[in-house]
Amino acid sequence: MEQSSASPHVLIFPLPIQGPIKCMLKLAELLCLAPDLHVTFLNTDHNHRRLLLYTDIQSRFATYPQFRFETISDGLPEDHPRSGDRFMDLFDSLETVTKPLFKEMLSSGIGRPVTCIIADGVLNFSFEIAEEVGIPLMYFDTISPCGLWTYFCVPKLIDAGELPFEGDDLDAPIKSVPGMEGFLRRRDLPDFCRIGDLNDPVAKIIVKEVQLVPRARGLILNTFEEVDEPVLSHMRSLCPNLYPIGPLHTHLKMKLATEPTPPGPQQASSSSLWQEDRSCLKWLDAQPPKSVIYVSIGSLAMMTSDQVMEFWYGLVNSGHRFLWVRRPNSIPGGDWEGQIPKEVLEATAKRGWLVSWAPQEEVLAHPAIGGFLTHSGWNSTLESMVEGVPMVCWPYFVDQQVNSRFVSEVWKLGIDMKDTCDRVVIEKMIKDVMGLRRDEFVVSADRIAKLARESVSEGGSSSCNLERLIEDIRLMKM
Ligand code: UDP
Image (cartoon, rainbow, N blue to C red; front, side, top):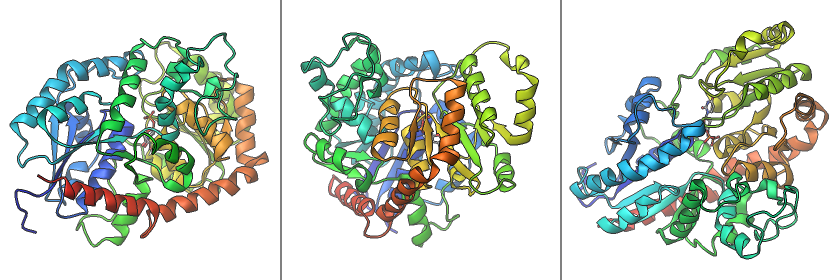
């Protein structure tokens, strides 16, 4: 198709970590299916190198002539872990190194003029730069709406004297988050609320984020109206222009299956920052239906070696088969691996499979999977929801404490293990989700999975919201 220089051109800028990159790439591909939109995806050099190393993303996107990747420095040395206790270095460096480079990039131009920026909601500096260079900005918050809504309510919690906490009773009820009265406790608030210091670096970023997000032209969310309606209706009082267009991975799958373009494979490419070990799919093929519990703590959470042993005994003692992702460098220090008891290794050889990174969407869709022991990252939660897989939740940080409460108390999709990491509790919860209480969870899981699929089908809520987003992007062209 002949394109005029005035065609709409979207620049997508994710927070440079696995979850946001993955779902923003899905959004990028969905936007590419509208042939009049030009799309540029801005990766950090570090992540782009990893994507090129571990995926076929370059050739996948080569099927879209109006798409290009751009890269920018995150300012950290290549061997920096960008996780664990050095995760916040990334935010400091984005602010000091990447921010000026981003401004320079937009001022000097990246080919055709950018008519709309879609930035991760936590990239606070993108708002300031977009204003300076005069380009409309939309935010995409890739965390859960329930988590984001608790962020929005932090000022209310402070005014009501509910934050910072007084005393150490984490089970005390929280009353000042509209829509969550009755089931939210202190321990369900985002982890930074426990620090008790609003000058903590994470708290400062979040306080700024909730001031800026409502000022953007719109807020894109990876959810669907049917599952999050109560929270979305509260959020609309602050951000009237919401675009809930998820679950994005299912949305893209659905569109690729029904649209005549692109000419390439009719399925999305992997966007993993680690090498996917596909041996686990073969192993799953040999397991009975619904017999395996899948275990993963995502791309950022860490475990101590003691916690690993509690998980391991819990899994082995449950008697169930398990597929366990142990991400490289997610268990710092020690030579604990040399000290695993023989009986644990033998049970693992019989009933378990360990990988360092899995093709998670395919794993969760596999008929052998019966449950998910998860850190409750929002992408993982959605991926589990879509496949109707009940969860045991062991949240780590950001929105995950809220998500796990919603999984157990609102959506009834599983059990919230929260702040416990004890082999006896893990064993019991796995037995509950895989057997004793399974029926209770499967009813809700099947219902919500169906709603998710309907929302991304033609005429469904997420499908209509995506059409509206594309139309609004077109109207923004200069
Ligand atoms: N993931 C994956 N393979 C793994 C573990 C995780 O592909 O072995 C993907 C998972 O499908 C999800 C993302 O990594 O899309 C993790 O995002 P999430 O929001 O769940 O958690 P985070 O990593 O941001 O804490």
